[in-house]
Image (cartoon, rainbow, N blue to C red; front, side, top):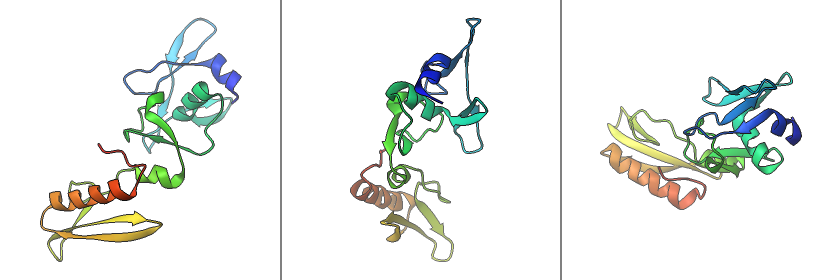
Length: 157
């Protein structure tokens, strides 16, 4: 899809942080486009090719597709407002992603054997153990402090 095709076919209409793209039809009808995929991203089909909606939004605003990945600042994959998107490398994008948890606290896992809450962070492709804690709140505080210190692309929620 070229910039010209995108401008002639779509219109950016931010709608409470959802799909944000409207398809313009010759009849004057305008319809929001985008189908939610299994990973939580909106995508669309144009000329038999699939595109992520957030990448088309970027194209409409900047005249070209992003050279690398786009990061959703607020971590909400369906929020495709231009102010919620920023360029990111794969490493930077992963710094702002949610970490899985079995404890209810981001980046914290409950260890059944020790009955403690453990946390770790990834630095330069290596997992760094941050410690074991008596409560998920303590472990989460250690995790967030490490994220803020080491992951410069991390956005506090």
